[in-house]
Every structure is written in structure tokens, then in C-alpha cells.
Amino acid sequence: MEYDYVIVGAGSAGCVLANRLSADPRVTVALVEAGGSDAKLEVRVPLAFSKLFKTARDWDFSTARQPEMSGRSLYWPRGKMLGGSSSMNAQMWVRGHRADYDGWEVPGWSYDEVLPYFLKAEHRIGSNRGQVYGTAGPLHISELRSPNTVTAAFLRACEELGMTRLEELNGPSNEGYCPTPVTQYRGRRWSAAHGYLHPVRKRPNLTVRTGADVRRVVIEDGRATAVECADGSRLAARREIVLSAGAIGSPHLLLRSGVGDPDDLRAGGVEPVHESPGVGRNLQDHLASGIVLQCLKEITLAGAESLANLARFLIRRTGMLTSNVGEAVAFIRSTPEEPAPDIELIFAPVPFVDHGLSEPAGHGLTIASVLLQPDSRGRITLDGPDVVIDPCYLSAESDLRRQVLGLRTALELFGTEAMRPFAGAAMQPYWGARSEEELARWIRERSETLYHPVGTCRMGTDDAAVVDPDLRVRGIGGLRVADASIMPRVNRGHTHAPAIMIGERAADLILAQDRSAASP
Image 1: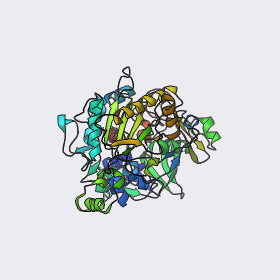
Image 2 (image 1 turned 45 degrees about the vertical axis):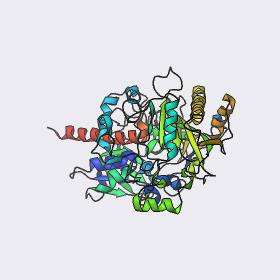
Image 3 (image 1 turned 90 degrees about the vertical axis):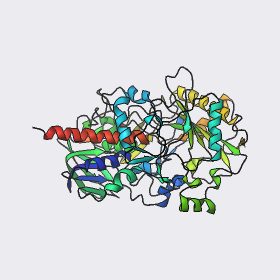
């Protein structure tokens, strides 16, 4: 089959592109997804996202063993269905800080230049103080319908420590504390598929193919002409192929297609087609370390699956099942010298351990410290046809030092007057680490990903960049990358919002090029 555009990956950016490009009835668009449908109850119930982990709707990745993390291999869930990871994330809509986008130093991607694309995507329900958000976009963003009682206590604890209360989390600066805005509509998850893809599925010029595992991009005479699937079928592109397979999938596809460092490609059993040493490098992720204490009152999400809560959700779309787990956040600087927040503190009114795969041992509370601006850099490589993920966590000594400082603040929050009625003793697996040495050991032994890999197809103007500022793969015609892999540096927020923004901007870049080519 032949189409004008072939988009690989129906995640956040891919759904945006499918919607925006197929709006022109004169062009044909194919959206190719390795996973299946998102029509599953656990997708719609906000609290149930961890029940999708290690299922058919999860890529179920594992990292290489991490020397600085007690030799552990860490589990990395990634969405494998329509909507991608937006169909199984914690629904937190956190754009980041102005300094993130200005700091990329890429023409066309400063904060002021990307802000219109955030606004274009957003449909903020309820509060919009200061006109921070867009109000007419496809993505519904709202407050939690039924925040936990202890969440309000956490916010008061932040005030006790002298932090700044934010009227809205997504202004130019996110330094301070705030309840978490979520991608929900009437108490249910609202993913990229719900916002962008499902409303246009019946367009005659849009083909959505699920269960199609793309194995490589066909490159002929320096131009990408088609994608080849595992079953041997091909989808040809008259105009462009866009990789939106994420920070793991997009570099993996480029490497399997012969685009990368020639020595690494040959070591992985692939004949080089185009030299681009940056493919797979510059991998960054947010590392999270949680303090878990018993809750002195039986009011946490540990009781969310009761019949009463199920009835509240089914009848009114309220109650604990509408929680996203990470109900409130605080963005802080680990030291006054930091130019902007480098630590995020996430409050969860539940003992969130083992990615939520294990049932809570009882009522408990979690404050997780998240390292927002890691100095460590990892990479994606090949092992034959398979992908090797090596984030190189804590390979930069500064990362461990700052994460210890983040956990100290978490402990201070638990020790405030506001949290005193709720915060009890240490709860397993947290053993009550307090000293610098104990906290460092806790970080190495128990930290996990916050699910935010980026950077492996870095955008830039230098020769080492994989894609240029228009997201075109350097040296290959007819091929772009549009997802979180193009981010030069991970943002001081969460990655769903910028991935949507990248999809919106990519669509504009493609359409502008087409208009230019069509003009006399």
C-alpha cells in the first residue's frame, strides 16, 4: 500500500500527527501501531494504570544492569496500544519550566515559540487563572474530582516549609507547589487517542493499522521510501515517513535501518546505510526515589477497590478510582545556586512501591524525590535485532548528591505539623534511612524510573544532532522523527505534555513545507 504520509507509532505525538495531517482530505495518511486497541477498562479508570503494566499493552522493557544502582536491571513500562504511554501513564499534565525550552538553544523551539502549541492542544476545564492554558484544544485537562484528604495536608506541609503556592502549575515557572492537573474528562482518563485519534478514525483518508510491528525503514538512494513490518508487508510513503515510536522505539528503528554509528551497527549485525553517530545516544530519564510511611488513618488509596468506591466511580465518576496516584507536586531547587528547580517532590496517598504491581501492605503514604536535571547520560544500542537500554543511572556523582538532598526535603515534609496526624513509622520496603550514607544506599537499591526517557534522536544544528530543527533526519530525505526522543535535554516536568507539543509543531512544520512546495 502507498500513502502520502506514514506515521510509525500511535503514541502521544503520533496521534497528534494522524489528526492534523489527515485534516486535508487530499492526502492519505497511515498510522502504524505495533500494539492493539486501547478499549480496556483499566485504560479508562485513572487509578488502574499499573494494572496495565507487564500485560499485552506494555512493551515491558528492562534496562541493562546498572553498576551504580546495586547492579539492578530496572523495569521500564511503555504503552503498546493506541495512545501509547498516554494510555497508561499517571495523567499528570506538567509542561516544565521556561528554562527547559530556552535551554535547548534550537531555533524555533524557545519557550515563547513552543507555548502556542501547548495552548493549541489544551482544553482546560474549570480553573484557568491568568489565562495559563488553552481552552479549545483536543486534550481535556482538569483538577482531580476526589482528591484525598491527606493531599491537602501535604500542600499545607509545603507551605510550612516556606515553599511558594502556585496558582497554576503550568506557567512559565513551576517553582513551588500545587495540586496536579490531570488529563481526565469527567473522572476518566483522556489520552492522546481519546483527544486526537478516535474523533477522526472514520476519515476515509486515514488508515489506522494496529498489530503491525515495524522492523525497519526502507532507505533507497538516500531517501526513506517505505516501512517494512514483521510480516513482510510494506507501507510506502510518497511524501514522508515520520517516526513517533518514542525514545526507545525511534532510535531502535533507525539503528535497525542502518542509520547510526557504523561500528555499533556492524557489532549489532546491521550493515550501515547512513552514518549518524548520535542515534541512540544522549539518553536521559527521571529517576525517582520514594519515602514510604504508614498512614495513621485508614483513608488512603489502599482501600480504593472497595465495592463502595467502585459504585462511586460507575455511578458518578467520583471517588478514589478517579485518583491519578500522584495527586500533588512541589518543584524545588536542591541548592540556592540552581538556576531553576532540579527536584520534583510527588505526593501519593498510598504506599506506591514496585510500580504499583504489588498490593499495598496497608494504608501508607509516599513522597517521591525525582531528579529533574540528571547529568548522567545513557544510550540505546543493538543486540542483534533486540534493543539494549542503558540509562547509566547515577554515573554522574552529582546526581546522587542532589537526590539525597531531595529525600531530605521529603523527610522534612513528613515531619511537619500538617503531616503529623497522618505520617507514622517507616513502612516496608523503606527501612527508615536517615543518614546521608543510608539515604544513598536507599537510592541505589530502591530507586526506579519515573517513565520519562528522552533525547535519543537529539535535535540540533550541530553535526552530531540526529535531526535538524525541522525534525528531519540529517542526511536522509523523506524521514522525520517527532516524539520525546528529539528533546536535547529532559524537561523540568513530565514528558507527556512536551510530546504532544512536539507532535503539534511537527504537523505545522510538515504542512508548512507542503504549502511551500505547492506554491508557484
